[in-house]
Structures are given as structure tokens and as C-alpha cells.
Length: 73
Image 1 (cartoon, one colour):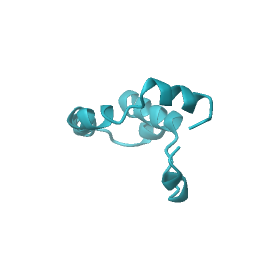
Image 2 (cartoon, rainbow, N blue to C red; image 1 turned 180 degrees about the horizontal axis):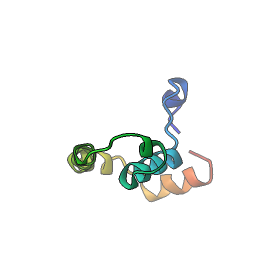
Image 3 (spheres, rainbow, N blue to C red; image 1 turned 120 degrees about the vertical axis):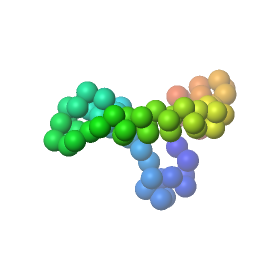
Image 4 (tube, helix red, strand yellow; image 1 turned 90 degrees about the vertical axis):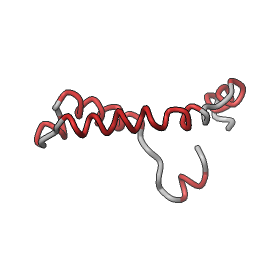
């Protein structure tokens, strides 16, 4: 975990992110009470597709990933 993100309190919870995306797509949970239209889903998909090259380029190499998994990174 990057120390800067911890200091800035900008650490995302991936479980919450997955839950929110599922709720958005299925119209349940938080989004069950809100009007969700296809434009919102379209914008999310465009964002993912449009930035894929950038976020894929930040993937950890195998050695670093193994260290991270062991808590050594």
C-alpha cells in the first residue's frame, strides 16, 4: 500500500467497490433506491475501456506481487 495514499486517507476498499458495481448493475442495495439509467452504466464502461492501457501498465511484476502477498512490500 503506498504510504502517500494512507497519509491522504485515499485508500479504496476493493470489496466495497465490487459491491457498489454489482449494486449499480443489478439495481440492488444502495442503487435500489435511486434512479439508475443506462447512461451511467455507459459512462462507467467508457471510463474502464478508455483508461485500460493506463491501469494495466501499473500492474505489479510477479516478484513484487509475491512480496506484496507476503506483506513485504
